[in-house]
Amino acid sequence: MRVDESQSSDNVEDRRGMSGGAMAAGGGILSVVVALVGVFVFGLDPNQAKQLGNVVGGGAGALREKVAGAEAGKQRAPDEVTKFTSAVTRMTEEVWTEQFRELGKKYEKPKVVIFDTQVSTGCGNAPSAVGPFYCPADKKVYFDPSFFDELERKLGGSKAAFSQAYVIAHEVGHHVQNLLGYSARVDAKRGTKQENDYSVRLELQADYLAGCWAYHADRKYHILEAGDLESAVKSANAIGDDRLQTRSKGWTSPESYTHGTSAQRVKAFTAGYKTGDLSKLDMFFEVRSAGDL
Ligand SMILES: [Zn+2]
Image (cartoon, rainbow, N blue to C red):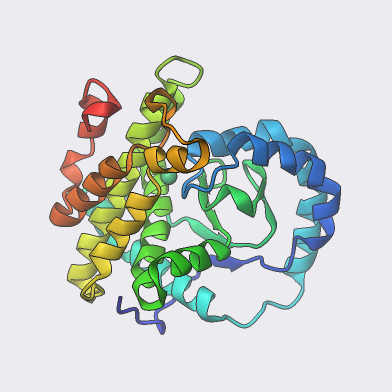
């Protein structure tokens, strides 16, 4: 992947090294979250992110003070992770501002927060074990870059960059869904039998949006190199619910899927990448069930 790191976004916040002190106090509460959502998927889905607030609300105050104190101090110099994240975020801002304009809407840029250990969010406290996620309440994307190291180990150094960009684009995709009103459709199903089915629709649509972003970003910036799409597909393939469940329990139960199967994730991303077509977004909610996607 070719990334011009001289291009940067004003909306990336580096909060690493700011959570140490509050961690001990919040530990008990955090383990509940880990038990609740503790699978290593990318994308704690926005529904789950919302629920963080209910579970961990208690510990948030202490951490918030800690973070506010640290923010008043000196900002660290941008390292490779920050530069890369910032450059990719900038490309999402430019692509989505343009695409929203074509839809006759205004794009509101989300903040992207890099953290380690744990983070205080508008959706409650989250440990890094939840993986990258988007919090609809504060409209911020959160991730711990150790997730990137994981991808790098799985995919091999140079091949991992585009997969990392895909992770950011998927989470920004959840923000786009929030702005376009798709997240609300899923919220309306919370607590009903269709909750998981609608969560899968939303996740696959976020993969599709990540693909659309890649289509438009590549036309604008020529970011893709040989092997990039394969590596994104490979990571999409590794994080489907079927694969994750097989790995953790040895079997799968499709009714409990919240992100879709590996094949569905690859298909959604690829369809977005091939067309960049935003007029197809309703399709994810028009099918009879998420299994038809
Ligand atoms: Zn997601």
